[in-house]
Length: 110
Image (tube, rainbow, N blue to C red; front, side, top):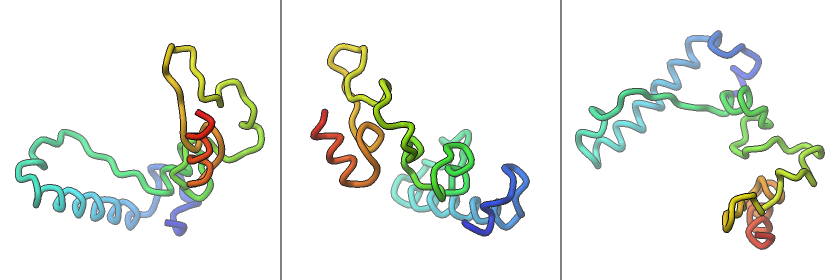
């Protein structure tokens, strides 16, 4: 998806939108083959790509991680497993650090 990286949202080359539609249809056809009638139930569909995630989430090269991996996020009050809601805890990569090890350590911290 790097070829569309610098193009503006909703103003990318038609090949980008064609590819998104092709991927969407492949996914829907796969699900439909196992669950007939599934496609008829869909009212709206939207496929995200790494370019989508980079634009909306500012994630590096469209990584699927939630919060940007920048030093400023560490030690913030909101980056804590404990929440104001009794017995509700957060875990995963956004609590501790990125990647599999980060998610695992987030679970340990929780």
